[in-house]
Image (cartoon, rainbow, N blue to C red):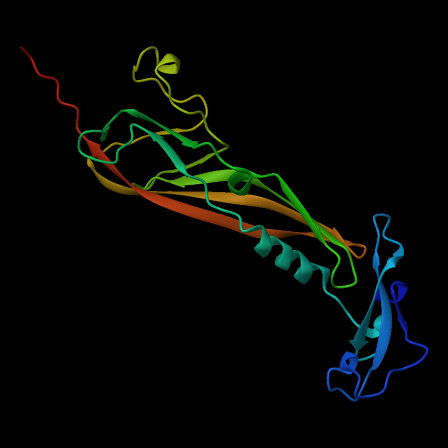
Length: 218
């Protein structure tokens, strides 16, 4: 594949030329980066040293895809929860419908994001977006959702104990729980006549306080 873009220089520079990088084996090649149609672009030609004929050099497109994924610098979602459960004033309650959602996710937290790389002599394109979020509630319960629905008073008839239409959980015991939301990404890549997927997930955790609602008779 790389042979479509690299040709051995008809006149090899002397061994003390910087292009050799103090090497004595291999050869100097004239290479052209692929344009938008993936054909060699003569306006983007550069000189490089190669240890052998470019046809013999194997570039792993999956490895290039992993490099692209790392450069995207994706992030875990911010946990949206109601009741907030972050202190003893805003704690959740046993038997109450807690709502769960991804709080205003950015592109880096949810996608879709696409990127490509042609620097290795092949063009690899990658696309990533969250497929699902797995909520480990810390009490043995696990909930699998999409983005979820942000809680609002209007959706709960002024704050009544109404279940989320898309993602929620009911705690059955008092306690302090560690809630962990793991976003599982769907990462697909293609290049050099190949394609595949990369397993990828990110997690974020928060403490969640659950109390017992006490009715007081006057």
